[in-house]
Amino acid sequence: MQINPKEIKSRYKMVPRTLVFIEKENKILLINRKKKNTFGFGKLNGIGGHIEKGEEPFESAKREILEESGLVVNSLDLVALIFIEIGIDPGILLFVFNAKFPGGKLVPSDEGDLIWIQKGAINSMNNIVKDIPFLVNLCEKHKKEAPPFICKYLYDEKKELRIVMNS
Image (cartoon, rainbow, N blue to C red; front, side, top):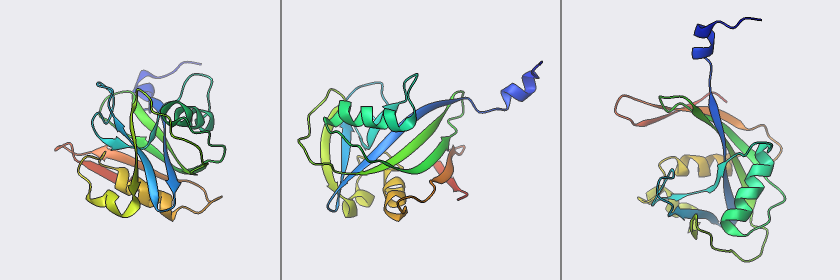
C-alpha cells in the first residue's frame, strides 16, 4: 500500500501526555514546576508528564503521581481528551484525569513543590498555567463513569489560547 505524502502531512502527529488533578476536601493538589526547560516552569500545574513507550494513559498517570508526589492512587477518572495544536509537529494529546486523595504523605521531588490550593482561589491566581481553571472546572462537572469531554486547544495569531469544545 502506498501512502500519499499530502495525506500524511495533514494527519495529526501527537505526543501523548497525562495531567492529573488530585482532590482533598475542597482543595486541588498542584505542583510548582521548578525544572527549567519544562512546560509550565515557575507556574502551578497538575501532576503529570509524558506517556512512556509501552504504557497506556492510566499507567502513565499513576507513575507520574508516584514520581512527583509519592502518592499511590489506584482509582482515576478519565475526564477529558484534549488535542493541542501548537503550530508545529508533533502536537500534544492530553489525557486529563481526576482522582481523590488516597491518604498518605506527600513526598517532594525534583519536579517541583507540591501545594494544596482551594478550588475557589484557582480562578484568581496569576502564577498558574493558563488552562488550569478550565480543566479544574471540567473535573468538577464530570460525572464518574461518564465519557470524557473531548476538545482541542488552538492558538490564534496573538498566541492566545482558544478552547474548542464539541462534547
